[in-house]
Image 1: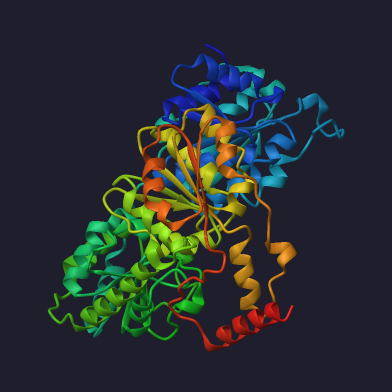
Image 2: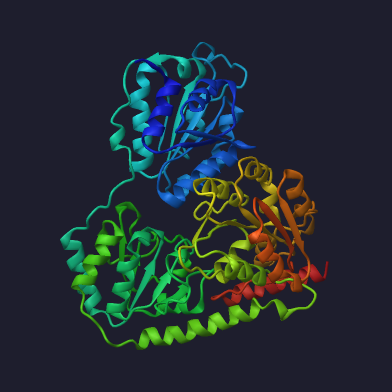
Length: 560
C-alpha cells in the first residue's frame, strides 16, 4: 500500500525503535507530525526551542548509543537545531535531524523563510541531503540512518512540504540493518606487538576514555594483572566506582595530582578508548600504546609507539590473556597514597561547616552526589560548574554522567536532561548547571513540566560567568565586571511559574536538608543555590607562569 513520505519515515523510525521525536511543529512538518499522531508506537515531544529538541535527541543518543531524533520546520525552525546538533557531532552520537522546507515549486526564488539547510548543516553532519521526490525517500531515509549509526554522528534529511505529503509505493529499505555498529576485532599482529612492549616496561598506567565504557570488566582485570593504576578522562568518570582502589583520579584541570603523576611517571602509557584533546597534559616522551576503533584518531594527540586498531573490549581482553602477571605493586601503592591525600583535601573543601555565612560550590556538588539515587543520571553543564562536579561527584552503582564533553557548550545540560528523562521517567535525572547556563535555555524547564519529566535542576548561582572570570585572570587581565556579572531572576519563582517546584538556598546550614527535600519532591524541581563567587577550583597541576598571571590579574582588579 502506498504511503506518504511522512508515513514512511514514521513507520521506519517505529520499526527500529526510535519512537520519540523532539521538535517544534510547523506547516512544513504537518504531514510528518500527523503520521506520528496516528502511529501508536510514536511520541512527539514538543519543546520550547528547537535547540532544546536537538539537545534532547543528542542526550538520548549519548547515553544509549541508539538513534535520537529531532525536527524543525522551514528556515528558522530548522536552523535553530544546528547548535544542539554539534553535541552529537563532537561526542559521536547517532542523531537524525529532520528539517522541513518550502514546497519544491517555491525553491530557488528567495521565498519566505527559505534556507539551504543542506549547505548550512554540512559541518555538523556526516550526511545531509534533500529528499526531492517520494520514490527517492526509502533509499535516502536508509542512507541517513545507516550513516548516523555506522559513522556515529548526525544525519540531516531536508524534506519539502509537498514531498512529505507525496505518496510512494516503494517499501522501506532494509530496516533490519539500521542498528548500532558492532565491535571490531584487533589484528593479532597489533596485539602481539603491544604485549611485547607491556612485558618490557617497568611501570604501566592505564588511561581510559569513554571509548572503553564497554570494556570496564576487562580494564579492571588487566589493571589487576599488571598492578597498574587507572586514570580516566572526565567523560569516563562514571565508568568506575569512586572508591575503587585501582583508580587514582582523572587528568587535566579536572583531574588529580595522582592522575597526573601516574601518566607522567610511568614507563608505558596504555591509552584505552581515549582521544584526549589536551596534549599539554599528556607525556611526549613515554612509550605509548593507543587502543581505538578509529585508526585516524590514533597518534594525533601525542607520539604513539604502537597502535591497536579495534574495539576496546576484545582488545583489552586479548592483552589481559597474553601479558605477564606482576606482583610488584609499589608504583600503584605510591599513587594510592597520593590519591587518598587528594581525596582528603576534596572532603575538607566540601564540608558545609567550612564557612558559616556562605555556601561553597564544592559542598553543593558533594551533597547532591551523596544524596542521589544509586542509578541517578547527572547532566552537567559547561563552565565553572564542570570543575565543581567533576572533582566532587562520587559515582557509584549504576550512576551515569553526561553533558557537553567535546563540544563544551554552555547551556546544554537542561535540554540533554529532558531527552534522558524521557527515556525513563522513573529514573532520577539531575541537572547541575551554573546560573549563566541555566539562563540560556531555561524555557526548556517548561518543556519538562509539560511532559511530566521529573528532573531536578541544581543551579550554582554565583551571579556571573565564573569560568570566564577565571580565564581573564589566568591571562593576567582584570575581570571585565560588566561582561562577566549578571542580574538573575529568582529561579525558584521561575520554576513555580512554569508549574514545577522551586527552592532557594542561601545558607550552608540549609544545604543538606533542602537538597534531600528537592530530590524527594515529585515532578520537575529547580533549586537556586547562592554559592560563593570567589571560590577558586583546586588545580592538580599549575605552571608557575599561570600563578603569576592569575596574581597579576587579581592585583589589577584590586587597583581598579
